[in-house]
Length: 243
Image (cartoon, rainbow, N blue to C red; front, side, top):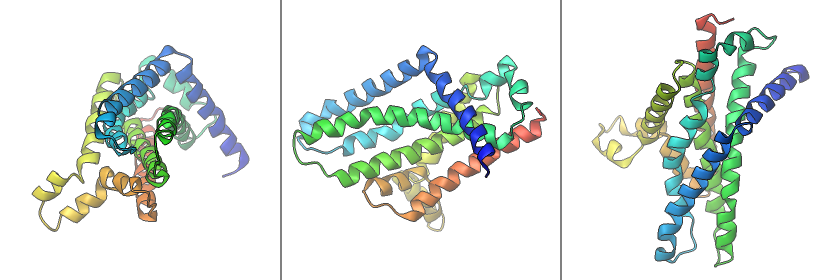
């Protein structure tokens, strides 16, 4: 990649990221995310009496199931409905540049939302000793998990003009990808299929990283998952003949 290629991605990325904060929707999303997550976590935190964020990171994948599709549902659907997609894709940019910019813009928005929750472990550290290894691992795992949801949601958004349909399909798709490695699914699957489902499920890799042990196979899995759906997104753009 040359400098001009990356510069174009950066310019498009900046436009995408700023588009979130140019409307009140971004602040509503972040506000709801913080309020719901904090309330659900602290509702039981003082009853348990342990300085641990495990409960919060057990909740986060489920909160992301709703937040991520809400972020991605408009990225292609709105452009197609308003007709601006024709203008965007006739600019001197490649399909990959546009897709990377949209994905990185969405991921940065999610990262900012996640970064604002870091006040929780800082507050907890004042109450007692906190094991920072699993906390940092869980944040990293959350970012990879969120990125996977976003890549899937971005792909689904490219398939329809309707934002509600894009939201629902992304929600269902992300839920299915996460639950592939759930215990009840593995118990009901044939013996030869269980290890495959466990590897393919987003959840098993998230919980591996959340333990504080960063394994390259989990990182490679998430990067591959994200790349596959971004690649599919590019293929949808190419086959629709928008250029």
